[in-house]
Length: 522
Image 1 (cartoon, rainbow, N blue to C red):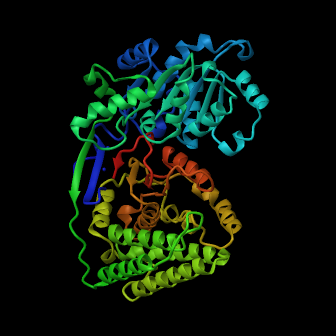
Image 2 (image 1 turned 90 degrees about the horizontal axis):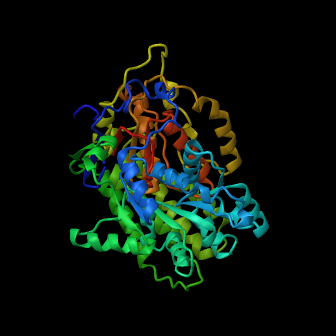
């Protein structure tokens, strides 16, 4: 492989993406040595000024690569129009509204506006809390803050209830505006504009305007559809050479991993057993009325996930995920009241235990056996070995580093009592924040298609780090989507640790448009 230059795992093989520039970033030195540079000193680039001028003239969809400063353009436009929002809201003053798709993106936008302006910013990310507010409470927020940054769900609730009128908004910013093409709150918000006599200025931000694949002949039609929905013109930098100077130019490599050959026959046996179990459940003639729960739904999902892990990662990971699923099924069985539902859950529980027993005949679950993982996993570990950084000599051992949070690999609790998990996490917090013994030049993300794949791949990487000194430098964790509820605080913590480089590899289930500055993407 070439020296780290961004390097994307497709189902047919590994696809790598590495930035053509040094993983150190635009400045010499290690990432923590760049903190002396003030983050509020920022001169607009030529293409940002060009797009700002377009946004001042008409509704605009800014189409730029990730990392090219789209949010900064939104802040510049907010400042240019700030004379409209500095007045008293009760005396026909207006407000600027930033819309984001998920709760964990609110803080990023708030930070950007506060860093680059003197405007008062309000943040609203919890629909359950915000939905209970009265009109008087919202009026207090509108009076106190000039810029309102909220999730699209909160914003839709505010607009539909009449707490804030579109005519009270001078600028409406849509982050990841390509989502408006789908059945999404962004689209519903834009429908409200159709009946508004004085619709606000619209600014859309996107790095992936199509939100999916399409044939070249459909390209113009899809862009025009988005423009029509947002009542805007799609714009990008006219000088693409200048733009390329400021954005990552990844070196893309596709690695052919070949098929998985298992001489022991375990892989074929497990695959046959899983397919037979899924066929049995699908063949069960269970009539489901619209208001009734599907008795087979949980069983189908669990067995399907287990099969996917087996095919993508191999028998060792299938055994691990079966153990996780058994623990979760115990909770379902304990609280299930319907007899038919309970029978399917018990069937699935018994079947997963059978999977574990079959695996135990071939390998010890206590340690990683690379004979029972797919060629894709083997190739992944080979790639990670090439990124081994220099070790700081003052630390004699790194064993503790890969042993962090071993009891908490899974978002589903290993214990039956959630309180016990919280106590374990509290005890391990000081250890989690201990500095890495490595320079952590590697900062990587592995994207996967299913949540369980991210969970078990993280466990595999940790186990490999304990057995192989060449992989001991890796500190990994996983993020399973945006998640609102129990997983949201955990995901926020994992993202923060990744950005601070306390973690240097993160398997992820859900793609996020802005996710730090990785030097390796798989």
